[in-house]
Length: 246
Image (cartoon, rainbow, N blue to C red; front, side):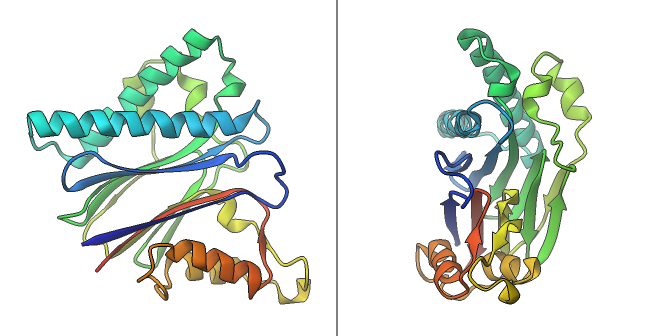
């Protein structure tokens, strides 16, 4: 059995909208789509882009779930992940044209995963920046504040774009898996700067430590502990999805 936990937090320096978003949605009886998105602060109304990607991914997950219910057929996780991205790519292109959107209105990073809860396997892709943590192993994807956003490529051929992607991760037999936006690196202690925690301590507390995981609001409790006990504020928006086997 796998328990899934989520948290979404607006950054201290963001006053109007949270520009991150998270998604968890079943695509078959034993498979789960997970994603976190992070709208570009320098883009136009970037909270919209992060939400748009998330809403489309939920729609695609529902479609796949109904398709599998009607005509179940085993498809390798990597091929199914590619199919999800292909549908996302197509719908983003259609929406861009229908609404007359500018590219800068659609800028968002994406960490997307497909998890088989029975075999404990996962296929993930990071488009832009983000963090993957599994069983204590950290995989940070950082593009020097110049993420190669999906929206930049909507005018190109999907197949060619997908083949050029290098930020793929395949995981087998995991016990603890998390995906996070890069807001996890932005915690600051404004009250007592001398007591600033290291990034590694905060990441370990949120993505490795399992204390309080018996609670459904496990990550929310941890965020509250960081704010109230450690007196740290997250300065950038933060979205996390964490899956722990029991």
